[in-house]
Image 1: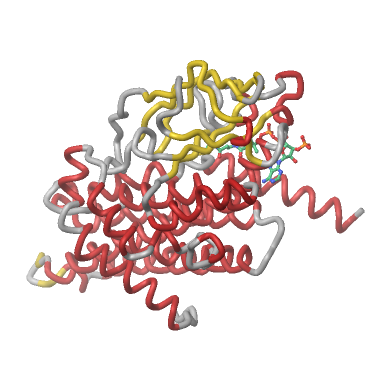
Image 2: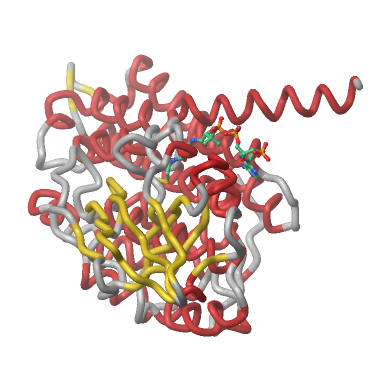
Length: 386
Ligand code: COS
């Protein structure tokens, strides 16, 4: 399918593809097995200006849109979702500053994020607040010129590795979700520590840790937007970032599909390559249809956002749901096409199948995405039918 990429977009895609093939593929199994954070690859991505892609030009970035970021994320995901998650979570953590930060905050943080000198994480989830994001219990209280933060964030991608954290905490308990506020907390702030590194089923190259705030003090200028805006900051951030998760799904599915096709061309059974059998061809055909449909919807959602659309929650939830359900299905089918070989660690598809599962869970489960889509449908029809 031709998506009419311009020259610059082709360059971004090809550069990400080259990094994926030359730097990520050779080490992905090692990183997975050793649960190791991809520090060297992060340096390569920084040197290649990948972190600058989504940062506005006036703050040292390349000023590209969600679409260009998706092209890069897709290529990285086709090689290793753990590395792609590390990269994409950096954008997730930065969006609150880009979308809602003050001029001072943007000037202070974005240029260093653009060069990759500083990396970022986003902290919303807590032990008792996953899907029910409004139920967070971490608090931030203004005392003099500082906010004092108390509470624990759980399962935070890039936790412990990142330098900058955008987190959501309650500043007014009586107001529920409307009493939440967003803050920037830097690594090294007093009272800010990390829990142990989680041992995960997949995306094991990415680091996941708790963020522990014990009377953590941050200057009052570190609030993003204003008191009470935290829930909206988080929701608008997720609306945008979920399109990137869709791109992760597309890339991962494509990576697994490529492995399955290459294997099926070479594997001989009953005297013929198994790709000559209709049963295998039909599986591959279904995989190809689903991947292309996911890519088309993901690109459309990204371009819709980049066109200046104000509300993309339905479109991003649709793209995230389709592409990540497809990634789970396609990676599972890739293992099936490859049979016993697919189940072995010598081939990358068993890792891809393990990696795929998180896509249906993080940045809002696919059940929550369907809630978001359902609510949007109700609103649209209420508007149009009066
Ligand atoms: N954009 C702007 N505002 C939004 C919004 C969005 N995408 N989603 C919700 N809001 C607003 C609502 O309009 C509502 O505002 P009012 O209080 O002014 O009416 C407020 O936020 C609360 O929304 P809602 O009543 O829908 O919240 P619920 O408590 O029912 O929670 C959420 C539903 C949105 C939290 C849930 O659908 C969700 O997305 N959960 C997943 C969270 C997530 O992705 N976690 C992963 C963390 S990062 S890996």
